[in-house]
Image (cartoon, rainbow, N blue to C red; front, side, top):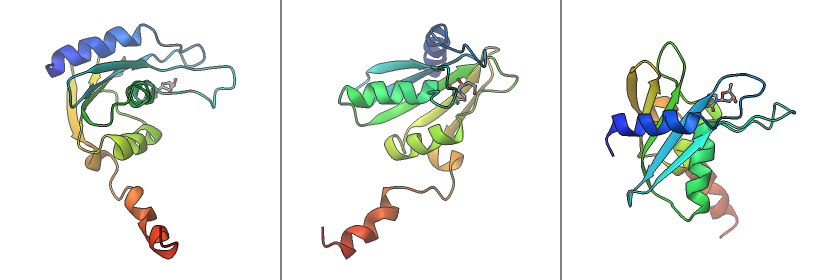
Length: 138
Ligand code: THU
């Protein structure tokens, strides 16, 4: 799928956003290595803090369907610049989709493409936990 089509899908997914408290609607799409597409939107609730971002909804949907390799992630919202993933989503992208292209968009046709490593430099990741395995002889 071309980036423009992915962004359209993300904007469509955004229609389902549950943005009761922020009124900030976000849509996202992930593409798997095998070409499957999963969409997500942000889901807010009354406690605010349990809010789930569109990107994580899309990634978790795909993971829960057994997908493990991702080539692209698109995110779109009504922002003056392209909508960039929040810090929590950057961590999840780094952990589960480190090689994916991250396509940030807004509703006005502005697009920026990033790599996970650019969005979360000096990231904490699975390799930081390796030394524990050695200590425990696992
Ligand atoms: N949000 C996302 O869904 N993705 C982002 O990358 C940024 C923030 C959501 C969370 C919350 O529902 C609303 O946007 C305002 O922060």
